[in-house]
Image (tube, rainbow, N blue to C red; front, side):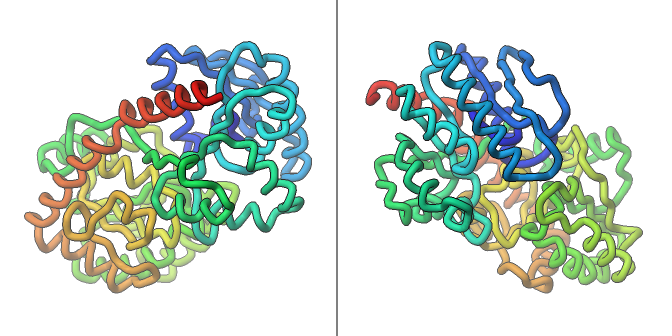
Length: 381
């Protein structure tokens, strides 16, 4: 697996990569990872049966670090070509470029997984990058593409990639046996992690511009008027890209929400916070497919999210979630209030979310689909 960053504690690509590797190892498939060493970890180490190779990172220069990763990954793939059968790339940027270039020398099938769409998606971004025409030609070296949604499939089709090369495989997660729809479960987990609030809404993810947290703060002003005892937990950090944590903290002060909005940063026990909370909120303007949303569904949460293509892939309004227009604080607030006003609706939505996750979003299902795809590639190669 070639992935730019796998060691960061949060982030959808990182989480998905680690979960997939774990499941592949459990099924007896030997895995190797080539990544960048953003976290000052050993250059080479074996963790849980997987060999991690990390290329050096110098400062914040994307260009320099990209070149280092390209060279380091290129020579590792050539030296170790007898150890692996398939090259799995997470994103069409650096990882796919490394695999595509090395494919002129060694004949190994390449799979690339796309993680973003829309304004911040990979198709749009790669067309704007330096040497865009060369990059687009190199993409022809990829045998199979994995996308998270039908919208992504349509989007990469604009690169003249045929439908038979594209598979839709959802992000997945471990499915807890408990469910946040159960009041006793919420009480148990609130006690476990010392949360004594009467009503809890939780957001998990990067505090970045596309997540719509400014809209959420404007919505929370409205929610707090009717439910002053409700508390909003923000789990996650700003990260390196499009970080708006400072701006959101300023909004919280401006709206005088300091008593009910809590910045908890990165937490290792996200599942426990989900199982302790009443509502999961995702006000994103754009998504690939949110791992946080997948985890919330698996936890059997009542979900309020924006009505964007990525969310609609797994969320159905009034069936397993409430979907609202983006950039509409009043609509977002009304949806949250509706779940508080009507507990029976909240429980119904949460139970349907849990059912959908069990049927469609398990790690076992995701791993099986990837293994079938790897085998098909090897048979065709």
